[in-house]
Image (tube, rainbow, N blue to C red; front, side):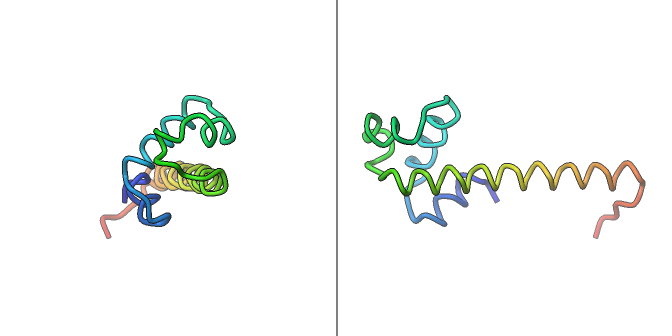
Length: 83
């Protein structure tokens, strides 16, 4: 599942809110800055929800990265099957 769609479902917010928030976070903006000065982009999400979303985003990205790493290791050992 796409990470952005998963976040939208988990937090019960619109996809555009997630997309805009992730873009702001990826651009290096802090949660307090986003909460105070970019409310129009996030649809008015509060700082607590933004922080939780940011933490969950980091977790899901790390998990996806680890999955790819494990898959690569299994493939390089010749042990990956189609099942």
